[in-house]
Image (cartoon, rainbow, N blue to C red; front, side, top):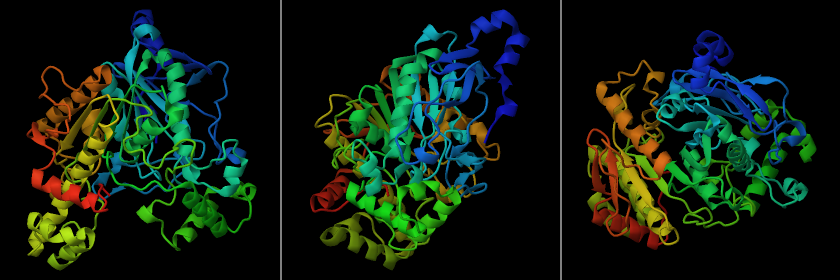
Length: 529
């Protein structure tokens, strides 16, 4: 999807506004590969669709990203690129209305990024936010409307959104691919794309008035998981200074080992009816999608993600990197209060018997204690318990993740819970749903004029984006006009609840946290999903 019709090309802006305005606004950028001209968006320059790597097509499918080619003359950067190859629906689904989802062209030729900068000169050295989109590692795009970086950038930071390969294109491992790799590893091409983007940004962001020594990586859901993988990857060392992980610390998604991942690649090749990687590379996207559908009719992978990050021994060398300290960095992290309302079909449709049986199955000998805290005697109680248990499992997993990380990290953690209900379709059911804080962070409430936003929504957007911008600038979310946000400490475990009431609160009541801690000690698992 492009929004170029709403943007004034910079060349026209130069002619219309004259030399004084040209000096006051960055209208052209010179990166390693050549010169760029983009577009004006309010007081911010937008450079869209910039290649950070060569197209990963043909023989480059399932290979690490290669450097982009140089160009001559001035490259127009006023339109988004195609989104990475994926299935695209129409109009959204559940609580995720059109502004949350991908539309427009998709392609394997998709390794591009978008820059929004308020800088007036290359020497401004403004702090940088690099956004890694979510989508379960199988969907999403940097051009989704709620990720428009103009309003965040107007607060004095450079905002960059990146695309990376998805699904089988970004994460398929196979013994033959491992054999052809000098490092003996395959899969994780999507993470290698993210690392290549960060290297390009580090080398070129000064051309947009950014500071290469003050880069914050940020993402939500799969983007937050990516943030944690980058923190754990030796290949990303030195590429960023701070991190933000929204709906993704302690999320509980298993990261398969190389052998398991290679078996999935073998299964895809068998489903495609070919016998070698060259033949698989020659198939069209439609043929690969058909093969994936056939493969998924068999044994469904645990976690429902057939192709996602793996422990490959190269990008991710260690299976236990939840508290990894390879890239020790301050982290701002949190979750929404109703992460599962758009994802769990049992929400508001559970029975007392079903919920009781689920708790007995999941918690074993601890089930009686869990049922005392989360009763399910009636269907109404059971439905309230489904919501509360999903939220508290997520909070407990975040607490245990933070405690583990603090054993090795020298840097602070700031944790939050977003509780505001975004107005819109069936808001009483979906409430503070998964990813609903994002348009408040980016200040993109206007991307959905159909939602009945109020002055309170705008106030909350100003508050939330203020915390995020302060973090990118200083490594501390606190600032004038904002409620005090404490550092997370294992003894107090205080987080900031952000919503209609913004206040400091314990991450969980002690008796609830104790139950989840005991559950994990007995070999149980937690997580958002």
